[in-house]
Image (tube, rainbow, N blue to C red; front, side):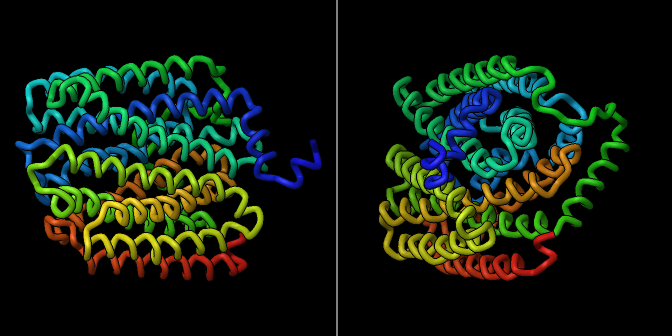
Length: 435
């Protein structure tokens, strides 16, 4: 058996990670919660962006995605500092219950058919709590996985969570159609999301109260102290050269993924189908999302093995170059000659690049940041990358024609990925990067 593991270290590391009871429990919490997030996002996307009576324009597209993606940008830093003070297991139990509670008014507002401020407010609360939970899950990982297998754990758990979101979104579309479509169908999907959040909370109770850290108990301080902790987290991130440099690459990746997200939405609604054929456009958008999820899954599978063989720096460079050349090359081809197959293939390529870099970034942060500062650093990390993602979506929503044929923008994004890959590869060769 030892010979088999040494000949296939990736397989042996995966087996070792899955052997941990606490890892499997943390993994199940992530899957249940993020599956519910996918259901929630599916219900809201169909309600706001894929309804015949609600034509998407630049403002609607940007606002919808900002509501879905930006909440953590506002609460993240403070949540991260609290994650370094509160028992993370208790956070997972209570925060998932809080998500289920605040989903109830969303059901009421959707039933009234109003895509207004009240809907946006409650969605911001629910998804803000979701981001809080995701930061807690990332900060908890070193407590359930040994350092040697950390990159495997980071490949498996977050990537599986991303896939769970995608699966939840696809199933949500199916549930909505089975329930008769329209706003009533969206309400049924939201009820299913509540069930998922409650299940995630129950699964968290199976962990011991102190199983996820933090290692050093610190009493909860005033908001001024929290703000000082935020500054400390930012300084820690700034002073750790490997963490700072990998942050630059993930920011670039999330920005261009935002361009892909908004571009795919506009292409399926404005170029691949007539504006009135909402159901067909929704189906194609689901396929594009699935393509990105498949690419992310493949990236997660191969990243641990490739980083062991060639190192994080070379692998990040390779996947970003392929994303820039192949991914955005195919997206540009879709803009010139709209075809679903090139859109899905391009999304898969860009998803592969983004998730591969995300796995590497999580590992670099966990290896270079002290545990008692890890929660606030991951919260800052999520805040910055979500701002980058929404920035990419917003730029595309306003700069692209409503058809999504944003050829020049896609070419610029491809070049940006290649340039960032060259810069990061060069930086990893310097002595400072290895400190």
